[in-house]
Image 1 (cartoon, rainbow, N blue to C red):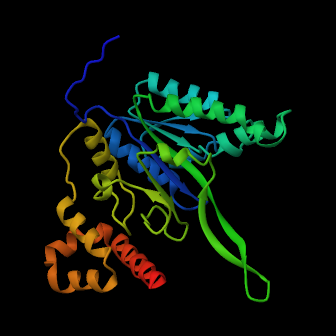
Image 2: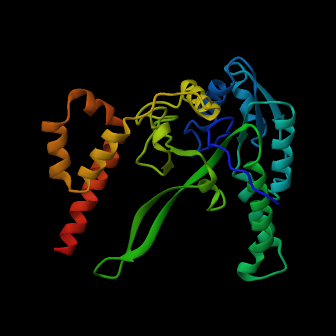
Amino acid sequence: MSFTFATAERRNTHILVALAGASGSGKTFSAMNLATGICGDKPFAVIDTEAGRALHYADQFNFKHADFAPPFTPERYLEAVKAAEKAGFEAIVIDSMSHEFDGQGGIMEMAEASNVKGPGAWKDPKMRHKKMMNAFLQVRAHLIFCLRAEEKIDMSKKDDRGRVIVENAGWFPIQEKRFMYEMTASFTLNPSSPGVVDLTLPHKVQDQHRMSFLPGRHITAEAGAKLAAWARGDTITTPDKELWDRARRISHDGIEKITTFFQKVATEEERAALQPIKRELWETAQKADKNRGELG
């Protein structure tokens, strides 16, 4: 078998986006906003595992609805997505993808029902999940997953009297732990600010998509349209990579250096262009100062 190598071009690619959050965090609404931007005037598909809750938005969005009842096996999720792909939908919203993990017939239930004891009980469920994920990567439609998330606590530390210290460990999506790594982009949404991009929470967003998801702003249909344009290979507004890389290098020198850069060196236009990564820069600078303090 011979191999042929062609010039690499970004065109006709498909994106996978995950929106995780607790009840009331704006997952479904945000997912439908993205799907609307991707599809324009055409309807998108919604695979609804939440007993028809997606229909609450029927007057606000143009979509076709499929009710997905248990069992929530990986194979049935794939069957539903494949049916939507075959029907020609450009975007497919899956709400919720968490049931495949902890719902009736999901992989957690499979592991619990296994005759194998210990970690081996997860071998078959995880293999079935992996096959589903590999198949999702080949789907010729944009996939938007809504995931439930739960807030966890850390009780691994103790104070000087031996008492357990209870600390907030943050929000975690209810899904197999490697699920988020397959996403083009992912965000954790907070019920205190539904549908708003908060980059202090777990997320994954590449620089070329940062302009579509600005911190403190809602996830909009415009963001979906920009993602679709990028996936088609269209030219989109991208960050000033040279400026961002320069600011990132300076942030590794600590708070004093990055503060001086913002206050005395950067122009007003440059400061505005750096807003999407400003928090990242300060966090990097704080870590740099902390590391030097520990070494010194």
